[in-house]
Amino acid sequence: MMIKEKNYNEFVNECICKGREEKQIGLGFTLEQAKASSKQVIKKTKVTPFPPNESHNPN
Picture (cartoon, one colour):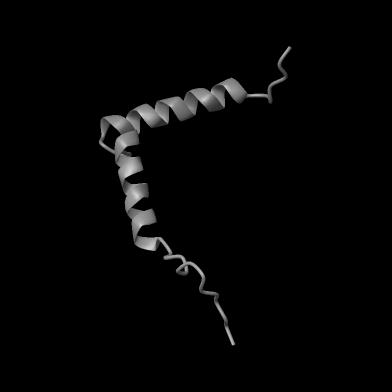
């Protein structure tokens, strides 16, 4: 048996309705768009590792 918070079903229904409304007016983005955006962020912030056999000496 699953125990739910009071008004949980109403909350979920509101979230679904809100999501559908936002989709109809063009808000949000597809999974493919999200993946592409994430890849761009990773590409821009990617840190270059130290070359092999070289150590980082902060002093």
